[in-house]
Length: 343
Length: 167
Image (cartoon, rainbow over all chains, first blue to last red; front, side):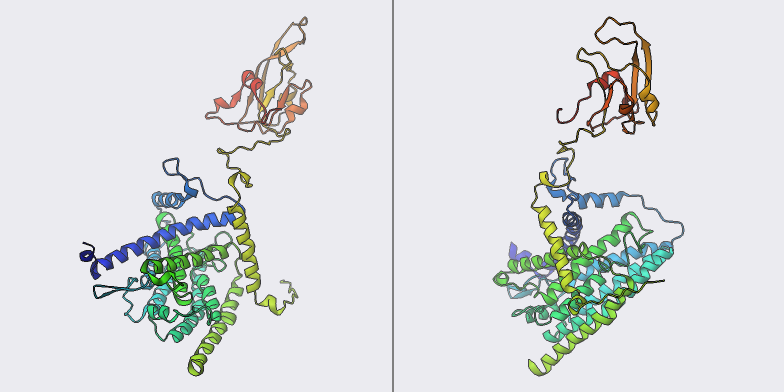
């Protein structure tokens, strides 16, 4: 029975459903962890009172569900001054790439059954462009922000969107150059080859500089604190000021989905993907190893958010252009020299 | 005009990362501290489940009309509290008494003594104005009503007010 069920077609559908659901679940969990973690870091208690059936509290895990329901049933107004078409499209542009990006990330060890090779990533890894696909889609995400800011027809939203676009452009350079180092060392753009190349030593050790640059740029790319200029919560008004209910929550979900994907990408590029001593002998073990690493990186997003204050905008630009870009270039040169003469 | 601060950072400080890591250790230590503190020992008292037991004596909560041991009201309907009240929350209707032969002889007593708890600002002026020590603010802090009428307390309710934690 199992054998007849396990064929490439059903496996594909199974993968898509499972990955999509688990990414969205992880997003919900991340919002919960964000609020509870923030509370604990600040010696508070945090949301812990939402109970299923009025009884079962389980540390307030029902909070994301309640938040989602609230946002879903909220009144959905159109402010009179917005550009209606763009206003509706912007959250979609933001949300779809955020959920699509995870498709290229291999989250487990490939296995062979009945002479057929099964890969644990939605996109087959022999599409040679795994990493380019991710960067292309991640670059799409900022359009959602820009379009949202423009459609709001509000000068502060527009300024927030401008900040976001300038920031993403500055940090994408450094990020991509850091990744070029990884690509050089693996000799391939395929993410499974990159993971394979790290079976001995994770990239974070030889390419420490690149890892730091990537890690910092990751925060800037996902618009998270200390680089959340696009949103700017209370002090500077962000791009989604004019958004409400489900359209707002699309932006919100996109931010957290981007966090999940960025964490996944960092794990794949620098922390050896699903490799872990003794754990990656089996397929299930490799998936567990990947998920654990992803959760650790995801937690670091929250952890850093409640540790560092926001940068000033000129500090952000200086950090991006004068420090991150040269550092990633130095990393690239070191890796290139090593592979030209040393390796 | 922006004031240019002359702060010289050392090479180590300019790396920023050590300071960031130090800060992250501080936050995570707070995280684990809160995580491993049982809810009963945290700063936050999760109210309906747990109540704050050590409300100080001087806390200004619900009023009480004090009585002598034999149950007669100390209040002599002098209107001092009603006059002192900045929120105009006290309403008194006096009645004349001629009970000079009793243990606590009084000329006047309130027939109606109402405090509108929705108007009251719990300032304690009534307590200070009272010449007979008849009205007192207790540390009973759970004052909940479901209607405006229920918030108007008469003599019967005010006499019964109990303090928290047993005096």
